[in-house]
Amino acid sequence: MISKTKKFLSDSERIVFDRKHRNTIRFNISKYQVSVEAGKKRFSALEDAKSRAAVVKRYVVEHLSSYLEEFEERATANGIEVLWAEDEDEAIMHIKNVIVSEKIKKVVKSKSMTSEEIAFNEVFGDLGVECVETDLGEFIVQNAGEKPYHILTPAMHKSRGDVAQLFNRLFGTSTEATASEMTSFVKGVLRSQFESAEMGLTGANFLLAREGAIALTENEGNGLFSVSYPRVHVVLAGIEKILPSVEYLDLFWPLLALHGTGQRLTAYNSVISGPANESELNGPQRMVIVLLDNGRTNLYQKKYQSESLACIRCGACLNACPVYKNVGGYTYNAVYSGPIGSVIMPHLKPNDDYSHLSFASSLCGACYDVCPVKINLPELLLRNRRDTVEGAKKYVGSSLLMKSLSAVLKNPRYISHINFKIQSFLFSLFMKKGFGKQRDVPTIDKSSFQSQWKNHQIKH
Ligand code: SF4
Image (cartoon, rainbow, N blue to C red; front, side, top):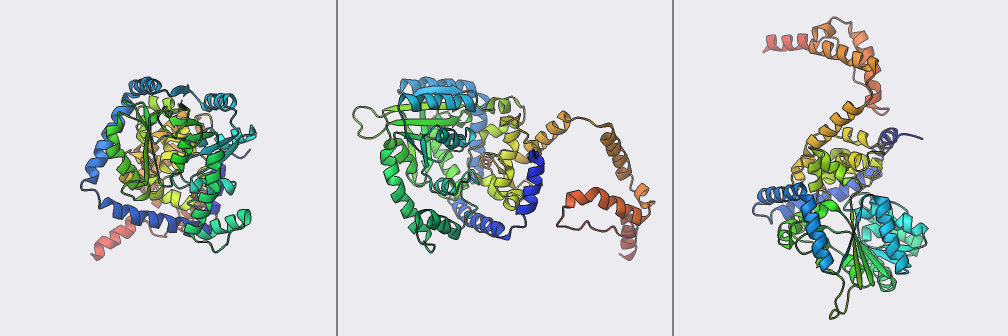
């Protein structure tokens, strides 16, 4: 079987020369950037808001267990069943128990990357449960037989024309349909699905410890429908999603909206604190929250990388990353892609080899600049790289080669004594692989840098 590293390299080599992919991503990210720049102007002190959010999230991560216990106690008092899942198998078992006991045939889902971690659609689809994605982007990729391309914008790699072609093939709509016509069409399709589903599955943007409630934020209203129509509501949330209380939403909701889409606030913002009570006309009779670890405590134990548990999954670092913009979301071959994915995947899934992702970065720092909770992603990528190198097998040959190279590079006079043809040959021998098939290895100049520098100083 081809290793993940080899697959990453061959997929990226192919996709970076795919002009259509590049144009679609650039177009969609450029629209996002215009919105974000406009949105930033609505903040009087954005840096202060980011600093405050960074402090709050780090404090919560440091005191994670006590906040989680508080959340469990309050949520249980609200009539919510709180279940803990160490890994994806345990999460699947809990949800399967609900599905079997409630005789669920159809589940409507709002957008949830956590559900991707447990391959919800595949697992429950195989068990005969109809799983319907109700977020527009997720609906598109599900019907295309694909996975989400981006943590916040699942169909970012598709143009309007691509979606129109897909809908024409599947549903017979016009290939000339506009974005709003297609959105109306999907709304119509989904309405009957909400009405006939017995269970709604959502994630949680935040878990509110003091209230024992979940906070959901979305633009289409599909999350609200997934919660209010079906008789059972299951929430699958990562344990790091905790905030101390509802009061912090005035900081985190606008920050998430700005960095996710450039909006002041997303259109629908809900705080859900339990199943419907007797006086309520809508809402589920049963509400279950599955708190998923799935490698997060591995991250928690890492002195430096634990900082990444502060992530609020806004997706801004993906949109800023020059590597992501060129190789695209699927090349990462991971649930979480881009800079944050490269930091967390090796720890969430230590048995699957994701360590190569930490090397897929130029360390330019654009991701750090845009992060609303100030996660120092380049620093954490370097920490991951060091862990990988320290944990790797040491070969006598390679360490000898590195020592000799280091001695030569520290003293460039050694190099200038070597004939430039031999220099060129050695350079191209070692660098060919790194430059790839599509680029020529640069040739080495006949005169050394030192002599060129000397001539330059004489002339000036
Ligand atoms: S690391 Fe920061 S920028 Fe990236 S998704 Fe998380 S919160 Fe957003």
